[in-house]
Structures are given as C-alpha cells and as structure tokens.
Length: 217
Image (cartoon, rainbow, N blue to C red):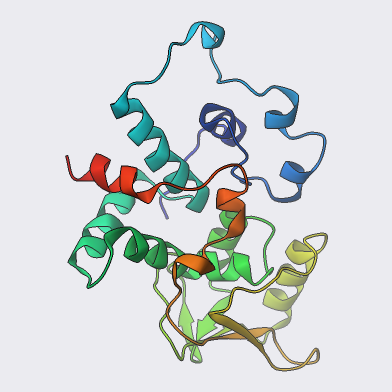
C-alpha cells in the first residue's frame, strides 16, 4: 500500500486550511493550522502572489491531500473521470467518494482516512460477504460494506471510532443492522456533487474546474 511519509500537518499549513488528516487532533487546540497558520519554510512570509499555474496546482493538491492519495493514483482517477459520461469535475469527486477507505471514514469507523486506509489494507472489511483489502476499491450501488464478524476486527474498529462521534451519513450510504450485529452500510446510489464531504469546503468552495484545467494542460 503506497502512502505518503511527509509530515501531514505541514500539508495543511501549505494549503492554508485544515485537511483533517489527523482525526480529532485537527478539531482541538493542537491543530497546527490554528497555532501557526502560514506555509512551512523559512521564507514563508516573503512569498508573492501565486500565478495562475500555482492557483490551479494548489486546488489539485488540496483535493488530492484531503482524500489522502498520491499523484499517480490521482491522475489515474482523473483519466477515469474524463472517460465517464457527464461533467468531469463531478465524476472526479464521485470517484473519490466511492473509494472504500473513504466509505469506511464517512461511516465513522475510523478517525481519519489514513486510519481507514490501514484498516482496509489489513483485511478488516468485506463487500457483499467477500474479503477485500484494497483501499482504492470503488463501491457501487447495492454493495454491502461490513466489518468482519470476528472479535479482532470488531474491537479495532470500536477502538478507532471512539471519540469520533456520530457522523452525519451522506445520502448515498445507509447504515444496516442493529447494535448487536457487525457494523454494516449499504451503498444506495452513486454519490453526487452534493454528497462530497462538507469539510472539504468548510473554508472555501472547491473549484474543480481549476483542477480540470491543471490536469488537462
């Protein structure tokens, strides 16, 4: 499983906004953006106004880092969005939301997307009763995502979800089962632009057109 080893708080500071890469820490007074809201580096105070290229790059980096994927995977996802029917920007966001690690995070089974990615890679979930361990796997309408019905998986998910609080589920996900059963959710439809994680735009709207212009150059 490819993952970035860069200091994640520096990523938030570089984008000038919270990307919620450290779960509950990002909501506390320890958040680096709240304590030191300027880009990393010794010359941060002397940086000039970004160019058009720089503006498009920052928009792409914001989306890529928010969902926790690397450049090669992002460009593969963008190519897939361009081949799909409909608006490319909306298709790109829909593909990001359909990732299995994102679904695990949106369900509140992990405190961050990085934790959700590790849970999936370690094989703690099933889709329609089949073992899965690929975080980038795309769910589709009708899929049933479940925590494995074994004590190890249940205890890990229970521990990681502590302190996360009850998340407001997006409209394309529906919780299944009772409290006594392994946690499950059903994908009811394809996610749309309105289903995107609201935290992505809590400090300004995402301008996906700039991302398309950057990746299409």
